[in-house]
Length: 381
Image 1 (cartoon, rainbow, N blue to C red):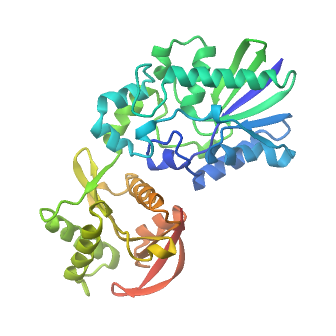
Image 2: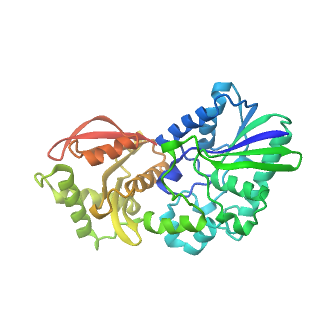
């Protein structure tokens, strides 16, 4: 009999930024790396003979928690990947909810009929996952193997062994990041001892989804919490932009001294003229919730993506929306081949500074601006 520990990867960018990441190769977050440490502690003293992972970074980085301390080599298997989302890859859930709500509902319910251009299907994922795992087990008779994969792919495989029809997979809760399932495999027989076990996480458990995060609940949650993005409409929304700039200045500096609206407007118009999709309005249920302004030209030859303006409007602050805007900036700049984000922050703006530090920006210098000196902050992407 072969014992399999089937483990979901730690929190990755798609989980945090609320984006559709199937085969998109995203990285672990700061929380994800702490979850990896908790996972390593869970498996201290547990004998492991072999380790397998999908060939995506988020699973490989999670698998190191088991491999490094044991001197195990990590075997990569693309058949352990998440469901391929085709043309939906790296789009925000809010965008998909707005563009194709019926199909998104099918996706979260794991409907066998769900399919978009270039994607897999849930029946296909279930078949490849079950075949991959039983094949790995057959290669390791009477041994213990750790297998690292992805949430929807794991759920699809488990449903097959638990006898859950394809049409009902979406009613199964999606396990937390680094959750563990234990399987006992004898020939073609697979017994699921337990699954979705996240007892090792404690207060590191994710807070992105509600506790009951089955398909229908996740879709309802997205309606009220997930942003979509569209270009700022010019010239109709110039006044809206200026009002947001004015409010952000007052929040940052506590005074309107030195505020120069014409210079800010000129920079925004130059950015938008070069690339309309570089100046974005963040929308929550069709209500403007923020502005993300990027400068696709400045320092492009240095691999830098500059963010001249990043603003969540007052009614929407402290609701976890800023991180989705950061995710949109990262997505945009990665497509342009940029390696670093750069922005400036007033040192007296404690809310903004703490947000950037929490999400792995670090101060690299100072620049003149505002009512004095601004901190220049950088994040590797």
